Each structure stands twice: as C-alpha cells, then as structure tokens.
Image (cartoon, rainbow, N blue to C red; front, side, top):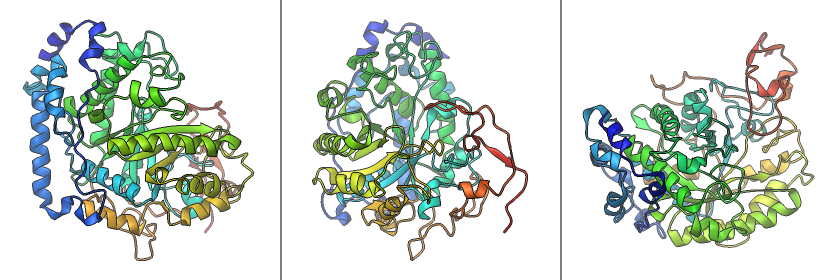
Amino acid sequence: RLWLKELRRAPPRSTMADTYGAVEGVETPLTGFQGDIEAAPAPRSRSRAAVVMACMMVSGAAATVGARAYSGSTTGAAQMAAVEPEVETLAASEADAEVVVGSWQREALRSVLKKVGYTQNIIFGHENSNREGQYFWDNAGMDAHSDVFNTTEQYPGMYGFSFQDIINGNKLTNHVLNAAKQNAVIEFFWEADNPVNGGGARDNTGYPCAALLPGGAGNANWTASMDKIVEAVKEFKIGGTHIPIILRLFHECTESWYWWGDEYCDNVNYKAAWNYTRWYFNEKSGLKNILYVYAPAKVSETEWQAYTNWYPGTDQVDIIGFDRYAYVKAYNDYVKADCEVACGFALSEGKPCALAETGIADGIENVDNDQWFMTDLLDNLMNSSDTCRRLSYMLTWSNEQPGRYWVPLPDQQTASGFVKFTKDKRTVFAGDVRMDAIYDTYGYSLGHKSDDDGDASGDLHGESSTDGPRPIDPTTPISGTKSMLEELDFQISRPDVDKDWGPYDPNAAHRLRKEYVSEPEE
C-alpha cells in the first residue's frame, strides 16, 4: 500500500508524541441542553434518511482527506489538520477506502447521557452481565442470563465488555446485540496487551505507550489489534443501524498497574497514544459510533495529574469519568470525594460525568451492611451535592465466582439493598419508561420499548433480524443461579477459560461454559 511507504518516512519516535499530541479545541456545547428537554436538538424531528445520508457524506469526506476532530467541535478540524498523521495524506487511494459507520446514533447517545445527568438519575451498568455470573458462563451470548436479573427481575441499563476479549478470539456480537435490543447502553474497555512483546497489560517492557506510535517497535502489533476491533465493531448493528458504544480507553492512568500508567508512561506519550488510537478508530477506520470516556483513578488524590497533566484534550474526550475501588470502611468517603472532583471538571468541560468502574475491592461478598447499595452507594452519591447528582452512569465489575462478585444473588447479604436500589426512582435499568421518553426525544432507539408497566422482560428481543442473534425466550429469575445447577448434571467443555483478576480454578463450574446433559424438569 502507498501509506506503508509513507510510514517508513515517519518522524523519529521522539517527535511522534508531538505529532499526535493533545488538541486543545473548544467543544461546541449541546444547544439548549441545560434547560428544557424540548429545547435540545431532536434528530427524529428531521428525516432519518436525510440525517443518515448527511452523516455518511460528512464522515466519508473526513475519512478521505485525513484526521478530523469529532463533529461536536467547530475548531477541531482546522487544528487536527495541522497535526494529522503524515501517512494519512495518501488515504484517498481506493485500496484504503472503508465503509464509514454513521454518527447520528452516537450523537443521540451523547444527548441522552447529558439529559440523564441533568435529570439527576443514574444508569446502572454491570460488566459482562450477560456473559458470566456467579454460577454461569455463556460464551455464545444466547442464554440471556444476568445475575442482575436473577436478583431483581430487571436487566442492567448498561452492559460492559472488553476489547481484549475480542482480540483474544472471543466473539461478543450476540452479547452486544442482545443487550442493545433491550435499549441498554453498551460500554467497552481495553485492558490491552503490551504491543511490543505481547505480554499482558501489566508488562511494561519496551515503553509501549511510545512504541505503539507509527515508527515504534509496537506499532504493527497495535494496528493489528485495532483492526480486529474495527471488524468486530462493524458487526454491532441492528438492521442497518450501527450500535453506538462508549470506549473507556487507557483507563486508570494515574496509577501504575498498567503499561500506560503513571510510572511506565508519561503525560506527553499518553496523550499521543490516546489521540493516535482515537484517530485510527474514528478517522482511519471510519468508526463514527464511538464515544470516548476518560477515566483516571483516585482522582481526589491525583486531581492535577488526572485532569490537567494527562488529560488528552477537550476535543479528544466525550465523557469525563473516574474509576474507584476501596475497602468497605473507606469506600463511601473516597467515592464521594472523587465524584466531586470528576463531575466538577465535567461541568466545566460541558460533558457528561461517569463513575466508569467502581466497587468494593475484591468484591462485596464480605460486606455486612445489607443496605450497602442504598447507603454507601446511591444515597452517598446522590444526596451529597448537586455536583455528584450530575452522574450519568455507573458501572460495576463482573461476577467472577460465588466468592468474588459485585452483584448479589437473592440469598446473599446485600441482595435486599440491591433490590431497593433497583426500585429507587433515581436509578435507571433497561426498559425504564422514563428512559423511553428521553430516547424518543433524542432519536436514540435500538430495541423494543418497555410495556406500559415498565417491564421489558416479556419480549426481550422484539423484532427479528437476519444479522442479529436468533430469538430466545426470556430468562427466569432462577436461571443461572446455583439452584439451577443443583438440579443438573453437566460436563465441562471449556477448560481453557482464563480471567484477568484472581487465581484461576479449573474446577469452578461458574467459570466455564457448560454443555448440559439433562434439562431441569418443568
């Protein structure tokens, strides 16, 4: 390809960070958002076909001529032109032409998140919720299990997934489509392997945050990983509509457990790595359906590092987030302090604020307070100040096993408080009738609407689609819990499953996909 010749003439690594450095553009605020909901732009007020065509024309032009800031910025295009990758000046060749994924649903999702924060509600999200639970593993994405549903009879309003799982060969298309057809928000993070030597995210060999840039030793591996992600994301569509996703890129950078973290990277190369990766997805590959959430860790203790020194740039970030784990006695004070800092900064930037990943360190299985979800989480955040009430969503970690989980099952200590948390009017789960109204206003719609009584579980998938998962029956509260497994004989068929957190136990049935020998009696 022609661009490979240009890549060989790329500037030395010492200048690559400057090439992909942060662009301090001024984001155009969402007109009329901080006021009447009717005053905000509503894509459905125009012809959907016209909107889609306009997005495709604009996006296609951007992908042809080079990198551009996202469509919310009025100054970003000119500024990005000054620092766009030199290799992309030849991107107009036929060989590099790509199908551009339209941005109209992304912008609708942006408006939805802003509105949720403005109405002082918060979307509840759960990592891998329909993929793994304390007693199930569904690698095919067809069973509609969720420990959230097992306890509350509601599905989470956000599902979190991992790009590294895709790179490692797992197919998450069914999981994403099933979640999106519930009108849940889709979030991904990327705990990326070291692009220099293929080691894990905690392997800092070869200064990978600089080496991933063009001309660096890890660039070929990095672009190969990004290409796998691009191909997977293009499958995330219902009918002709590509599902918008939130990407938590290079998270928890203010700590030092990942190769992009504080001790193993630096602020200049971090910004360069962020902006280059974002450019590759958005402009080089034509994925216009991604919102980027920037989520450093422990931000009340690292405020300057988090939101000044390492911040990728106003027009490089869509959502201001923060990650926080702590032990039980310290959690409520820490998460509240972090929220004040993060959401205060988000307000100054005019962006949604998110508790991007949170929970008790090592799981809530040892929490004695049965009302923890109400007292230490919801009331602690939503009653503390107007600033924290601006949170748009929160996401907690996946249920890895009965001794390490973040969402309780019905017979566990914190279950009663979690049920109250679910029923509280401040929290938002999939199928919430209030969310339907907000979705309608901003034109965000991927799945079926909830019933009049707010129950979306009766018709989980709604319309059939040739490019979607096969129709399945809705789960019941008992599905995926230990009471189900006690009635079954099963054979382990996936002994190769490994996890990022905690020791691997090959005999733990909940960690593996199972082929059931017998079905439970009705």
